[in-house]
Image (cartoon, rainbow over all chains, first blue to last red; front, side, top):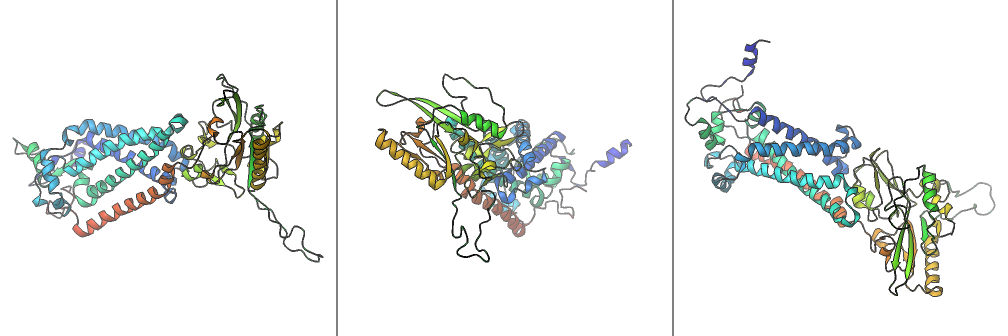
Length: 226
Length: 296
């Protein structure tokens, strides 16, 4: 394989707007680690959730196998979310721009983006999703240990067994709500979003439209883009 | 019984009614434990191990007459011992045979997510089917008596089967067979309830146990194991027998309304994003025929 082949396999910058790096390789790897572990837990968790979805367990090797791996994949998801926290905490704090944007969120939902105030690298909705998953996974992993080692909770503290069930269910449903919206927006609704988390790149028009403050920040002091 | 027996309804060339015609069999089986005549010999513990093929486990000495603190996945039958101080300062040595209660409304079965892992037979026996068990332990949260136990080697749950294999062949459970004092009885629920009530009356009228009574808790729809207690007002004294057991309300909510609220919410979410897409469509910013953010 020649070097030129490797080079040509990269997406060429499109003129005239150029291409901006939105997600580094590390960020993309962690996103997909989180995505795959979450989807595994979602499939197996839904199988345990309802008899009408128990058939989902057969997709991943049957009930006992699903039960065996669910907590381990859950731990993997927890670690990947904690890593994301470390990676993105600087970009995920709610700012004044977010507060302005949140008041105009209706325009975002209705695709009237020109009426929206400018946003940074992540918009308010993305940040909400991040914090939903972050706090969700904390609740899921703590209650998950309670379900995993339920017999280790003494009978006298059995209210903890019941609390673990409740917290796990509520937190899982909350993350599923976020997950549905996230997948919809990342694939069908916001065109360009999905390729950006696959290949890491967006056009400058895209960046200008959706994340103007971030665009200005990454292009500041230079006329050429990466 | 797990298998229905064939009862004759009509026979040919027979003078008079068919033998057994119109006879109804009471299929509801029940174990009666009379704690007032239990001497704590633990023959039932040994018989249980023998019949079910488990090795005797090391005992755990905790300054008591009890073999170990709790039943385990391979020790389904345990005499719970309690040195109970009565209100008049005297001591009662209370012994209660602890095992699965075979609830009419079983919390384990309600909590179980695995298709066919827990069955309730028409005779009232609640039985775990290990080939369908996924080892999740939800039954542990569902049980009001803390009975199901996890085998870490096979990752399956185990508990007393009420010797379903013996009972379905017309035999009494192994523990009943071994009891030397006759404090254990086995028969139909009706017969056992009668016997238990008679014994409780006897205890009240002839032995001065004014609070004697039968433990057959209504909160779980009655049980397939019932007790005669000297003091039915204080079942907790008998090794923590719950006073008013019922399926935990969390488990009922989780397996009932929460299921439908959650399922509707998930379906609603998918429906809403679909409608959103049909109503507003995608956000396309590049204005070119490439809609994917500039990827060629």
